[in-house]
Length: 245
Ligand SMILES: Nc1cc(-c2ccc3ccn(Cc4ccccc4)c3c2)n[nH]1
Image (cartoon, rainbow, N blue to C red; front, top):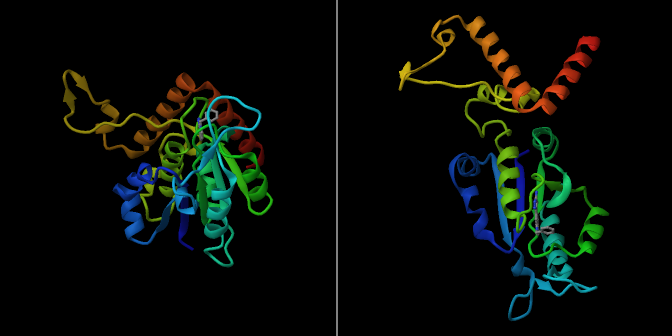
């Protein structure tokens, strides 16, 4: 089943990069089915209003529930027999990680992203749709964006590239950062010496077994140095496998 991705936003042009490069090619090859929707298409006033002042006062504006309700009712009914997984980027969401990207890419065949803006979306939209569909609030990280579009671009790229056929050489997926819980190893190409920096001799040896071991050691060393948190998780995972294996 082709992965379908719907994105609802008041800035559809923000999602134009999804027409480019590998994602764009995957769409043209029919590997991905991406639909970007302008939330204002579900407004009915002359100004196409999507926001209003917050109950209880406070700065900023809140996204009105009605346009979201009409948009999501229509979009989520557009594939009879299929159930969408709704994803709302938010600073207070669960962390979006490689493991989450892998789970979404393997277990879901339809993602509907809701891009908030202003101070966020009226809470009743979450209540209404969490009761009807799987709904996840996901955070890219502990920093504050102005809206969900940038997060959706990142999440869509992270998930789409795991879909078979989107990335030509799947072998390259194996040795990447965060695959298997470790950071990536250093990479080199010609020339063999550049500004007095030589490529590590091992990589010119042609001994593929030793090269693979060296690369794994580099991944361990880098992860231990840069991300001790990932290293602890990796060691626990290895210990667990040790007992089970
Ligand atoms: N990881 C991550 C996600 C976001 C995010 C996502 C969607 C929205 C919609 C409005 N805002 C602005 C906002 C900032 C803070 C508090 C409430 C709303 C958003 C921020 N920031 N950081």
